[in-house]
Length: 484
Image (cartoon, rainbow, N blue to C red; front, side):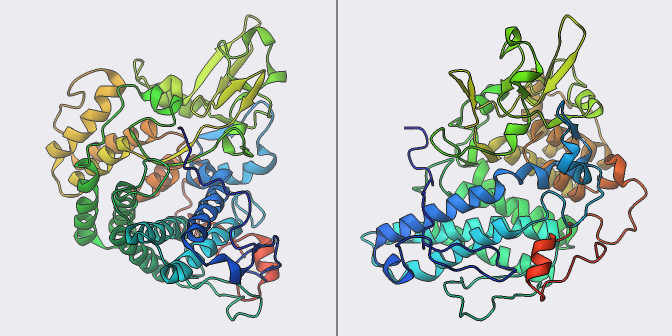
Protein backbone atom coordinates (compact mmCIF):
# COMPACT_ATOMS: atom_id res chain seq x y z
CA UNK A 1 0.00 0.00 0.00
CA UNK A 2 1.24 3.51 -0.84
CA UNK A 3 3.50 4.88 1.87
CA UNK A 4 2.79 2.01 4.25
CA UNK A 5 6.47 2.07 5.17
CA UNK A 6 6.54 5.76 5.95
CA UNK A 7 8.61 7.28 8.64
CA UNK A 8 5.68 8.93 10.40
CA UNK A 9 6.50 8.22 14.02
CA UNK A 10 4.44 10.58 16.16
CA UNK A 11 6.71 10.74 19.20
CA UNK A 12 10.35 11.71 19.40
CA UNK A 13 12.17 8.43 19.33
CA UNK A 14 14.27 8.99 22.40
CA UNK A 15 11.72 11.12 24.17
CA UNK A 16 14.04 14.09 24.02
CA UNK A 17 13.69 17.39 22.20
CA UNK A 18 16.78 19.24 21.04
CA UNK A 19 16.30 22.91 20.28
CA UNK A 20 19.57 23.24 18.38
CA UNK A 21 22.91 21.53 18.45
CA UNK A 22 24.62 24.86 18.02
CA UNK A 23 23.05 26.30 21.13
CA UNK A 24 22.13 25.42 24.68
CA UNK A 25 20.34 22.10 24.36
CA UNK A 26 16.92 21.51 25.86
CA UNK A 27 17.06 17.84 26.79
CA UNK A 28 13.96 17.70 28.94
CA UNK A 29 12.10 14.38 28.49
CA UNK A 30 8.93 14.86 26.44
CA UNK A 31 7.43 11.40 26.91
CA UNK A 32 7.67 8.36 29.13
CA UNK A 33 10.27 6.81 26.84
CA UNK A 34 13.70 7.19 28.38
CA UNK A 35 17.19 6.74 27.03
CA UNK A 36 17.76 3.71 29.23
CA UNK A 37 14.63 1.93 28.10
CA UNK A 38 14.76 2.93 24.44
CA UNK A 39 17.66 0.92 23.03
CA UNK A 40 16.73 -2.66 24.00
CA UNK A 41 15.58 -4.53 20.89
CA UNK A 42 15.32 -4.35 17.12
CA UNK A 43 11.90 -2.71 17.32
CA UNK A 44 13.46 0.17 19.23
CA UNK A 45 16.08 0.64 16.53
CA UNK A 46 13.43 0.60 13.80
CA UNK A 47 11.39 3.18 15.68
CA UNK A 48 14.51 5.28 16.15
CA UNK A 49 15.19 5.29 12.42
CA UNK A 50 11.56 6.23 11.79
CA UNK A 51 12.05 9.14 14.17
CA UNK A 52 15.19 10.21 12.33
CA UNK A 53 13.28 10.14 9.03
CA UNK A 54 10.51 12.16 10.62
CA UNK A 55 12.90 14.89 11.69
CA UNK A 56 14.69 14.72 8.36
CA UNK A 57 11.35 15.51 6.76
CA UNK A 58 10.66 18.33 9.20
CA UNK A 59 14.04 19.88 8.46
CA UNK A 60 13.32 20.03 4.73
CA UNK A 61 9.55 20.49 4.65
CA UNK A 62 9.61 24.28 4.42
CA UNK A 63 13.23 24.97 3.53
CA UNK A 64 14.05 22.51 0.76
CA UNK A 65 13.15 24.87 -2.06
CA UNK A 66 14.11 27.93 -0.04
CA UNK A 67 17.70 26.65 0.05
CA UNK A 68 17.73 25.08 -3.39
CA UNK A 69 15.68 27.52 -5.49
CA UNK A 70 14.71 30.88 -4.05
CA UNK A 71 18.04 32.69 -4.40
CA UNK A 72 18.04 32.12 -8.17
CA UNK A 73 15.78 35.07 -8.95
CA UNK A 74 13.37 32.68 -10.65
CA UNK A 75 10.73 33.24 -7.95
CA UNK A 76 8.86 36.26 -6.67
CA UNK A 77 5.66 37.44 -5.08
CA UNK A 78 2.44 35.58 -5.56
CA UNK A 79 -0.87 37.39 -5.41
CA UNK A 80 -0.60 37.51 -1.62
CA UNK A 81 2.90 39.05 -1.53
CA UNK A 82 5.39 36.41 -0.47
CA UNK A 83 8.05 39.07 0.06
CA UNK A 84 6.80 39.44 3.62
CA UNK A 85 9.49 36.96 4.73
CA UNK A 86 11.01 35.73 1.48
CA UNK A 87 12.07 38.91 -0.26
CA UNK A 88 15.52 39.06 1.31
CA UNK A 89 16.14 35.55 -0.01
CA UNK A 90 15.06 35.90 -3.61
CA UNK A 91 16.65 39.38 -3.82
CA UNK A 92 19.94 38.09 -2.35
CA UNK A 93 19.89 40.60 0.49
CA UNK A 94 20.17 38.00 3.23
CA UNK A 95 20.23 38.98 6.88
CA UNK A 96 20.48 36.69 9.93
CA UNK A 97 16.70 36.70 10.36
CA UNK A 98 15.95 35.71 6.75
CA UNK A 99 13.89 32.65 5.98
CA UNK A 100 16.14 29.59 5.80
CA UNK A 101 18.97 30.84 8.01
CA UNK A 102 18.11 28.57 10.95
CA UNK A 103 20.00 25.27 10.85
CA UNK A 104 18.44 23.86 14.03
CA UNK A 105 16.09 21.47 12.22
CA UNK A 106 18.97 19.86 10.37
CA UNK A 107 21.02 19.43 13.54
CA UNK A 108 18.04 17.99 15.41
CA UNK A 109 17.74 15.32 12.73
CA UNK A 110 21.51 14.78 12.67
CA UNK A 111 21.42 14.12 16.41
CA UNK A 112 18.77 11.46 15.86
CA UNK A 113 20.99 9.83 13.24
CA UNK A 114 23.97 10.00 15.59
CA UNK A 115 22.08 8.08 18.25
CA UNK A 116 20.93 5.41 15.78
CA UNK A 117 24.54 4.94 14.70
CA UNK A 118 25.73 4.82 18.32
CA UNK A 119 23.20 2.43 19.85
CA UNK A 120 22.01 0.11 17.08
CA UNK A 121 25.28 -1.90 16.83
CA UNK A 122 24.74 -3.04 20.44
CA UNK A 123 21.24 -4.43 19.80
CA UNK A 124 20.60 -8.05 18.84
CA UNK A 125 18.75 -8.62 15.55
CA UNK A 126 17.50 -11.83 14.02
CA UNK A 127 18.85 -10.47 10.74
CA UNK A 128 22.25 -8.83 10.57
CA UNK A 129 21.31 -7.39 7.19
CA UNK A 130 18.37 -5.57 8.76
CA UNK A 131 20.61 -4.11 11.46
CA UNK A 132 23.11 -2.95 8.85
CA UNK A 133 20.35 -1.40 6.79
CA UNK A 134 19.17 0.69 9.73
CA UNK A 135 22.67 1.92 10.54
CA UNK A 136 23.47 2.56 6.88
CA UNK A 137 20.25 4.52 6.45
CA UNK A 138 21.23 6.80 9.33
CA UNK A 139 24.63 7.39 7.72
CA UNK A 140 22.90 8.32 4.45
CA UNK A 141 20.51 10.77 6.10
CA UNK A 142 23.35 12.37 8.04
CA UNK A 143 25.45 12.68 4.88
CA UNK A 144 22.56 14.32 3.03
CA UNK A 145 22.06 16.90 5.75
CA UNK A 146 25.74 17.72 6.11
CA UNK A 147 25.92 18.10 2.32
CA UNK A 148 23.13 20.67 2.59
CA UNK A 149 24.85 22.42 5.49
CA UNK A 150 28.26 22.58 3.79
CA UNK A 151 26.87 24.17 0.63
CA UNK A 152 24.70 26.68 2.50
CA UNK A 153 26.81 27.77 5.47
CA UNK A 154 30.32 26.54 4.67
CA UNK A 155 32.07 26.18 8.02
CA UNK A 156 29.74 24.38 10.43
CA UNK A 157 29.79 22.15 13.52
CA UNK A 158 30.54 18.51 12.74
CA UNK A 159 28.65 16.52 15.38
CA UNK A 160 28.81 12.73 15.22
CA UNK A 161 28.44 11.44 18.79
CA UNK A 162 24.86 12.32 19.75
CA UNK A 163 23.53 14.28 22.71
CA UNK A 164 21.50 12.44 25.34
CA UNK A 165 22.11 14.52 28.45
CA UNK A 166 22.58 18.14 29.38
CA UNK A 167 25.71 17.06 31.28
CA UNK A 168 27.59 16.06 28.16
CA UNK A 169 30.55 17.94 26.87
CA UNK A 170 30.30 19.75 23.59
CA UNK A 171 26.92 21.40 24.05
CA UNK A 172 28.44 24.61 22.66
CA UNK A 173 30.23 23.43 19.50
CA UNK A 174 32.22 25.68 17.19
CA UNK A 175 32.09 25.86 13.43
CA UNK A 176 34.50 23.36 11.89
CA UNK A 177 36.25 24.28 8.63
CA UNK A 178 34.09 23.35 5.65
CA UNK A 179 36.65 20.85 4.37
CA UNK A 180 36.07 18.82 7.56
CA UNK A 181 32.33 18.84 6.85
CA UNK A 182 33.00 17.48 3.35
CA UNK A 183 35.36 14.87 4.75
CA UNK A 184 32.61 13.65 7.08
CA UNK A 185 30.12 13.48 4.23
CA UNK A 186 32.46 11.27 2.21
CA UNK A 187 33.00 8.95 5.18
CA UNK A 188 29.27 8.70 5.87
CA UNK A 189 28.47 7.89 2.25
CA UNK A 190 31.09 5.16 2.20
CA UNK A 191 29.66 3.64 5.38
CA UNK A 192 26.13 3.87 4.02
CA UNK A 193 27.05 2.11 0.80
CA UNK A 194 28.83 -0.67 2.68
CA UNK A 195 25.92 -1.29 5.04
CA UNK A 196 22.73 -0.80 3.05
CA UNK A 197 21.57 -3.94 1.33
CA UNK A 198 19.36 -4.53 -1.67
CA UNK A 199 16.08 -4.86 0.22
CA UNK A 200 15.27 -1.17 0.63
CA UNK A 201 11.97 -0.02 -0.82
CA UNK A 202 12.26 2.70 -3.47
CA UNK A 203 11.48 5.58 -3.05
CA UNK A 204 10.75 5.76 0.69
CA UNK A 205 13.66 3.84 2.18
CA UNK A 206 17.37 4.26 1.68
CA UNK A 207 18.68 2.13 -1.18
CA UNK A 208 22.00 1.71 -2.91
CA UNK A 209 20.61 3.73 -5.80
CA UNK A 210 19.76 6.64 -3.52
CA UNK A 211 23.20 6.52 -1.93
CA UNK A 212 24.88 6.46 -5.34
CA UNK A 213 22.84 9.46 -6.46
CA UNK A 214 24.01 11.43 -3.44
CA UNK A 215 27.57 10.26 -4.00
CA UNK A 216 27.45 11.42 -7.60
CA UNK A 217 26.02 14.76 -6.55
CA UNK A 218 28.71 15.10 -3.89
CA UNK A 219 31.65 14.17 -6.12
CA UNK A 220 30.56 16.49 -8.91
CA UNK A 221 30.52 19.31 -6.35
CA UNK A 222 33.91 18.23 -5.09
CA UNK A 223 35.30 18.19 -8.62
CA UNK A 224 33.97 21.57 -9.68
CA UNK A 225 33.84 23.59 -6.47
CA UNK A 226 36.48 22.07 -4.23
CA UNK A 227 39.27 21.42 -6.71
CA UNK A 228 39.18 17.62 -6.55
CA UNK A 229 39.33 17.34 -10.33
CA UNK A 230 39.40 14.14 -12.33
CA UNK A 231 39.66 11.87 -9.30
CA UNK A 232 36.28 13.10 -8.08
CA UNK A 233 34.81 12.85 -11.59
CA UNK A 234 35.90 9.20 -11.71
CA UNK A 235 34.20 8.52 -8.37
CA UNK A 236 31.06 10.25 -9.56
CA UNK A 237 31.08 8.07 -12.66
CA UNK A 238 31.42 4.87 -10.66
CA UNK A 239 28.45 5.87 -8.52
CA UNK A 240 26.16 6.94 -11.34
CA UNK A 241 26.89 3.81 -13.36
CA UNK A 242 25.43 1.78 -10.49
CA UNK A 243 22.20 3.73 -10.87
CA UNK A 244 22.13 3.53 -14.66
CA UNK A 245 22.61 -0.25 -14.50
CA UNK A 246 19.95 -0.77 -11.83
CA UNK A 247 16.98 -1.30 -14.15
CA UNK A 248 15.40 2.07 -13.33
CA UNK A 249 14.06 4.07 -16.25
CA UNK A 250 12.37 7.27 -17.30
CA UNK A 251 8.62 7.48 -17.01
CA UNK A 252 6.86 7.84 -20.34
CA UNK A 253 5.15 10.98 -19.03
CA UNK A 254 6.81 13.90 -17.25
CA UNK A 255 3.49 14.90 -15.72
CA UNK A 256 2.92 11.44 -14.27
CA UNK A 257 6.18 11.73 -12.31
CA UNK A 258 4.45 14.42 -10.25
CA UNK A 259 0.95 12.99 -10.16
CA UNK A 260 1.98 9.54 -8.92
CA UNK A 261 4.15 9.44 -5.81
CA UNK A 262 5.03 5.83 -6.57
CA UNK A 263 6.19 6.53 -10.12
CA UNK A 264 8.99 4.13 -11.07
CA UNK A 265 11.31 6.98 -12.06
CA UNK A 266 11.56 8.27 -8.50
CA UNK A 267 14.62 7.03 -6.60
CA UNK A 268 14.25 8.77 -3.24
CA UNK A 269 11.45 10.92 -1.80
CA UNK A 270 10.36 12.64 1.36
CA UNK A 271 6.85 11.38 1.97
CA UNK A 272 3.76 13.28 3.04
CA UNK A 273 0.39 11.69 3.77
CA UNK A 274 -3.08 12.99 4.45
CA UNK A 275 -3.29 11.91 8.09
CA UNK A 276 -0.25 13.94 9.08
CA UNK A 277 0.53 17.62 9.33
CA UNK A 278 1.28 18.28 5.68
CA UNK A 279 2.37 21.91 5.88
CA UNK A 280 5.33 22.43 3.58
CA UNK A 281 6.55 24.72 0.84
CA UNK A 282 3.95 23.58 -1.73
CA UNK A 283 1.24 25.28 0.33
CA UNK A 284 2.50 28.60 -1.05
CA UNK A 285 2.28 27.74 -4.75
CA UNK A 286 -1.43 27.42 -5.57
CA UNK A 287 -4.04 30.11 -5.87
CA UNK A 288 -6.12 30.68 -2.76
CA UNK A 289 -9.84 29.99 -2.89
CA UNK A 290 -10.43 33.72 -2.37
CA UNK A 291 -8.24 34.71 -5.32
CA UNK A 292 -10.52 33.48 -8.07
CA UNK A 293 -14.16 32.75 -8.83
CA UNK A 294 -15.35 29.30 -7.79
CA UNK A 295 -16.31 28.44 -11.37
CA UNK A 296 -12.60 28.10 -12.14
CA UNK A 297 -11.64 25.99 -9.12
CA UNK A 298 -9.33 23.26 -10.43
CA UNK A 299 -10.67 23.84 -13.93
CA UNK A 300 -8.32 25.21 -14.96
CA UNK A 301 -6.92 27.04 -11.91
CA UNK A 302 -5.43 24.86 -9.18
CA UNK A 303 -6.51 26.23 -5.81
CA UNK A 304 -5.91 25.59 -2.14
CA UNK A 305 -6.88 27.05 1.19
CA UNK A 306 -3.53 28.71 1.82
CA UNK A 307 -2.27 32.08 0.63
CA UNK A 308 -0.56 32.31 -2.76
CA UNK A 309 2.80 33.59 -1.52
CA UNK A 310 5.13 32.42 -4.27
CA UNK A 311 5.09 32.49 -8.06
CA UNK A 312 7.61 31.99 -10.84
CA UNK A 313 8.72 35.31 -12.35
CA UNK A 314 7.57 36.22 -15.86
CA UNK A 315 11.16 36.06 -17.10
CA UNK A 316 11.66 32.52 -15.81
CA UNK A 317 8.25 31.47 -17.07
CA UNK A 318 9.36 32.58 -20.56
CA UNK A 319 12.47 30.43 -20.15
CA UNK A 320 10.48 27.37 -19.06
CA UNK A 321 8.13 27.85 -22.02
CA UNK A 322 10.88 28.76 -24.50
CA UNK A 323 10.18 25.61 -26.55
CA UNK A 324 6.48 25.55 -27.36
CA UNK A 325 6.03 21.78 -27.30
CA UNK A 326 8.04 21.17 -24.11
CA UNK A 327 5.84 18.77 -22.11
CA UNK A 328 7.46 19.94 -18.87
CA UNK A 329 6.37 23.55 -19.15
CA UNK A 330 2.69 23.24 -18.12
CA UNK A 331 3.71 21.03 -15.19
CA UNK A 332 6.31 23.51 -13.97
CA UNK A 333 4.02 26.53 -14.31
CA UNK A 334 0.50 26.98 -15.63
CA UNK A 335 -1.51 30.15 -16.09
CA UNK A 336 -4.96 31.47 -16.88
CA UNK A 337 -6.49 34.81 -17.78
CA UNK A 338 -10.13 35.22 -16.77
CA UNK A 339 -12.73 36.94 -18.97
CA UNK A 340 -12.12 40.20 -17.11
CA UNK A 341 -8.48 40.10 -18.20
CA UNK A 342 -6.96 39.23 -14.81
CA UNK A 343 -3.91 36.98 -15.08
CA UNK A 344 -3.16 34.09 -12.73
CA UNK A 345 -0.20 31.70 -12.64
CA UNK A 346 0.75 28.88 -10.31
CA UNK A 347 3.43 26.24 -9.84
CA UNK A 348 1.73 23.07 -11.02
CA UNK A 349 4.04 20.38 -9.67
CA UNK A 350 2.92 19.62 -6.10
CA UNK A 351 -0.86 19.46 -6.35
CA UNK A 352 -1.55 17.05 -3.54
CA UNK A 353 -5.16 15.85 -3.34
CA UNK A 354 -8.37 17.86 -3.72
CA UNK A 355 -10.84 16.33 -1.29
CA UNK A 356 -14.22 17.62 -0.21
CA UNK A 357 -13.40 21.19 -1.14
CA UNK A 358 -10.00 21.16 0.57
CA UNK A 359 -6.49 20.83 -0.79
CA UNK A 360 -4.53 18.11 1.02
CA UNK A 361 -0.83 18.76 0.51
CA UNK A 362 0.35 15.17 0.41
CA UNK A 363 2.56 15.24 -2.68
CA UNK A 364 6.03 13.92 -1.87
CA UNK A 365 9.20 15.94 -2.27
CA UNK A 366 11.23 14.24 -4.98
CA UNK A 367 14.87 14.25 -3.88
CA UNK A 368 16.38 12.07 -6.62
CA UNK A 369 14.88 10.57 -9.76
CA UNK A 370 16.21 8.74 -12.79
CA UNK A 371 16.06 11.79 -15.06
CA UNK A 372 18.71 13.42 -12.89
CA UNK A 373 20.85 10.30 -13.15
CA UNK A 374 20.93 10.79 -16.92
CA UNK A 375 21.79 14.45 -16.48
CA UNK A 376 24.55 13.60 -14.00
CA UNK A 377 26.02 11.15 -16.51
CA UNK A 378 25.92 13.80 -19.24
CA UNK A 379 27.73 16.21 -16.92
CA UNK A 380 30.43 13.63 -16.26
CA UNK A 381 30.92 12.99 -19.98
CA UNK A 382 31.22 16.74 -20.62
CA UNK A 383 33.85 16.97 -17.89
CA UNK A 384 35.75 14.24 -19.76
CA UNK A 385 35.38 16.13 -23.07
CA UNK A 386 33.22 13.32 -24.45
CA UNK A 387 30.53 15.56 -25.90
CA UNK A 388 29.03 12.93 -28.19
CA UNK A 389 28.68 10.63 -25.18
CA UNK A 390 26.99 13.42 -23.22
CA UNK A 391 24.46 13.90 -26.02
CA UNK A 392 23.32 10.28 -25.69
CA UNK A 393 22.06 11.07 -22.19
CA UNK A 394 20.84 14.60 -22.88
CA UNK A 395 18.78 13.36 -25.80
CA UNK A 396 16.95 10.86 -23.60
CA UNK A 397 15.75 13.81 -21.53
CA UNK A 398 14.99 15.85 -24.64
CA UNK A 399 13.05 13.01 -26.29
CA UNK A 400 10.52 12.93 -23.47
CA UNK A 401 10.36 16.71 -23.25
CA UNK A 402 10.04 17.59 -26.93
CA UNK A 403 9.00 14.32 -28.55
CA UNK A 404 11.90 14.47 -31.01
CA UNK A 405 14.68 11.92 -31.46
CA UNK A 406 18.24 13.30 -31.36
CA UNK A 407 16.98 16.76 -30.51
CA UNK A 408 20.57 17.84 -29.88
CA UNK A 409 22.49 16.69 -32.94
CA UNK A 410 24.92 19.49 -33.72
CA UNK A 411 28.62 19.90 -33.07
CA UNK A 412 29.00 21.91 -29.89
CA UNK A 413 31.82 23.66 -28.11
CA UNK A 414 32.34 22.92 -24.44
CA UNK A 415 30.69 26.16 -23.36
CA UNK A 416 27.72 25.50 -25.65
CA UNK A 417 27.08 21.99 -24.40
CA UNK A 418 27.50 23.10 -20.79
CA UNK A 419 24.76 25.69 -21.34
CA UNK A 420 22.55 23.02 -22.93
CA UNK A 421 23.07 20.83 -19.88
CA UNK A 422 22.33 23.64 -17.44
CA UNK A 423 19.22 24.71 -19.33
CA UNK A 424 17.93 21.14 -19.38
CA UNK A 425 18.56 20.77 -15.65
CA UNK A 426 16.74 24.03 -14.92
CA UNK A 427 13.72 22.91 -16.93
CA UNK A 428 13.67 19.24 -15.96
CA UNK A 429 14.22 19.87 -12.23
CA UNK A 430 12.36 23.17 -11.82
CA UNK A 431 11.19 23.76 -8.23
CA UNK A 432 12.90 20.58 -7.06
CA UNK A 433 15.54 22.23 -4.87
CA UNK A 434 18.36 21.96 -7.43
CA UNK A 435 18.66 25.23 -9.37
CA UNK A 436 20.70 27.34 -6.93
CA UNK A 437 23.31 24.65 -6.46
CA UNK A 438 23.39 23.91 -10.21
CA UNK A 439 24.08 27.56 -11.02
CA UNK A 440 26.97 27.58 -8.56
CA UNK A 441 28.44 24.22 -9.61
CA UNK A 442 28.30 25.10 -13.30
CA UNK A 443 29.85 28.51 -12.82
CA UNK A 444 26.83 30.50 -14.00
CA UNK A 445 25.43 31.95 -10.79
CA UNK A 446 26.83 35.45 -11.35
CA UNK A 447 25.74 35.40 -15.00
CA UNK A 448 22.20 34.08 -14.56
CA UNK A 449 21.06 35.60 -11.26
CA UNK A 450 20.23 39.25 -11.86
CA UNK A 451 20.62 40.33 -8.22
CA UNK A 452 24.15 38.86 -8.09
CA UNK A 453 25.58 40.44 -11.22
CA UNK A 454 28.69 42.43 -10.34
CA UNK A 455 28.81 41.07 -6.80
CA UNK A 456 31.48 38.41 -7.32
CA UNK A 457 33.86 40.05 -4.85
CA UNK A 458 31.43 40.25 -1.93
CA UNK A 459 32.68 38.03 0.88
CA UNK A 460 30.76 34.74 1.11
CA UNK A 461 27.92 36.10 -1.00
CA UNK A 462 26.99 32.54 -2.04
CA UNK A 463 26.81 31.34 1.57
CA UNK A 464 24.11 32.11 4.12
CA UNK A 465 24.24 33.83 7.51
CA UNK A 466 23.42 31.87 10.68
CA UNK A 467 20.19 32.98 12.30
CA UNK A 468 20.24 35.30 15.29
CA UNK A 469 18.89 32.75 17.77
CA UNK A 470 21.86 30.43 17.23
CA UNK A 471 24.34 33.25 17.65
CA UNK A 472 22.63 34.61 20.75
CA UNK A 473 22.40 31.28 22.58
CA UNK A 474 25.82 29.87 21.75
CA UNK A 475 28.78 32.19 22.23
CA UNK A 476 31.02 29.68 20.43
CA UNK A 477 29.22 30.19 17.10
CA UNK A 478 30.53 33.05 15.01
CA UNK A 479 28.56 34.65 12.21
CA UNK A 480 29.38 33.77 8.63
CA UNK A 481 32.01 36.33 7.58
CA UNK A 482 30.41 38.96 5.40
CA UNK A 483 27.16 38.90 7.39
CA UNK A 484 28.40 40.31 10.70
